[in-house]
Length: 316
Image 1 (cartoon, rainbow, N blue to C red):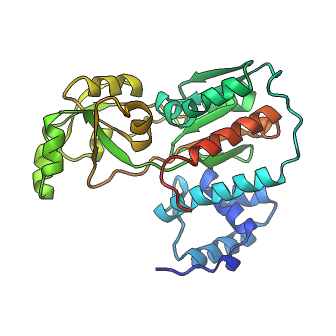
Image 2: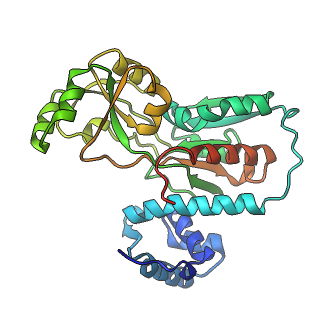
Image 3: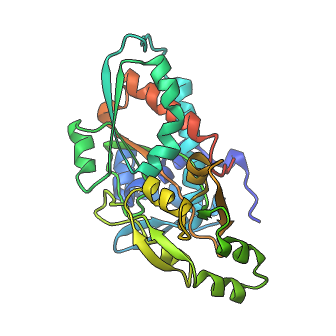
């Protein structure tokens, strides 16, 4: 295992890494930091040595993060989120009297995991703040720029952020197979003694697809493609609706463990591990510079980040 010396890392280098992960361009990242491309290149080279990984791969679509960099992005984002809280000026915001609307772009899956756990606290402390949530779309980024939306919560690997945007990875959660309690295939999957036997059982599983339209203009990967042998039986663009079908039929859905804990706990659900495991879900909270210093939006961000830290898989 590569041994890290914490004193070898510095904030400017970590800042470069997180910006490069966001925009995929070394020149843009250097410009955002006010440094030359040659200096940014040297910093990236030093980071590669420090972490023992290439961190980014140059492609026609820009510099794409490696698996190791995806993991680091989560941890680095938390470091800078803590710094922002530490260095923030004290606010005199009286939440009990604020009348405002906060507008989110998020799928119902992201809403369930990242927003629903804090709604009671929001209602108690800021009773006159109205929450509006709409699905993300190809127009979302422009809405954030114009001020027609305040926050985006999404995992979109193809989305590149320019210098006007901020982001932080909220959490990491593995994917599982969600089925109703008593589904005979759940017991057979757990009892499978070999990979071949498991694939035979998976071939009988009917998967409910849950497509999500992403800001990059793409659609999220089809979950059935993560489970070799399983076949698609339905397509429902609402995770709540798909979960209800899974819990009241012999169909199943691939969903994050975080969603299963929020929506299906105590409702007669079977959660089955997937092997091999699909990629982790790493949603980002994204916002524009326009709202970066807004007291209400700052408070809302801190609530979302604090709540997310109680979920998923921590790398710290």
